[in-house]
Amino acid sequence: RVIADFQLPAAAAYAEAAAAIARRAGRSAAPALAALLHNIGATIPDSERDRVLLTAVTVYAQGESKDIRAARGLLPKLSSARYRTLGSLVCGQHRDAFNHARRGASVELVELVLREAREGTGRADKALAMEIEQFLATHRPREPDNFLTSP
Image (cartoon, rainbow, N blue to C red; front, top):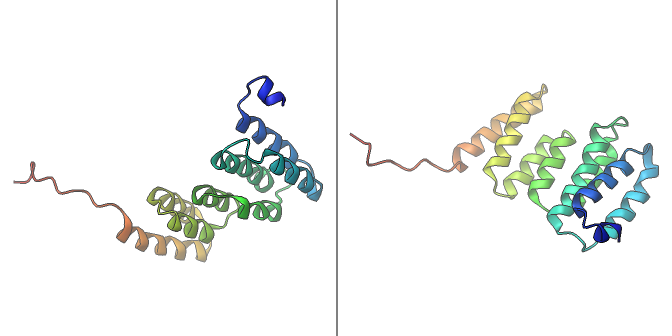
């Protein structure tokens, strides 16, 4: 009601609330976060809801507690391939991020996952980077031939 009365941007307010809840230590934040997500309901579009969830995922994964398990638990609640990809990257799950980006048919996201995989230090990251490069070789849009500048 306060958000509506003062015409505040709802998604930003909810994202701040989700971040504050996620900063709480341990599992005690889970019920409060679930209540917030339930209360959001249909008040904001799914894309904005995903942004709120991604904020919580990021705080869990990269905050003081570094609670990757809690962060991963929120990933299935994300509705779009874009936010699932970003959430998986935040959690260090490059393979899952690649799968979500590929299913979402986003070359841009696949390229982002490739950059992250190349920065990884493990063998799995290097193997995944090679697999992504092969995928991109067949799925990147081709440059059109420019017949006007051809000799």
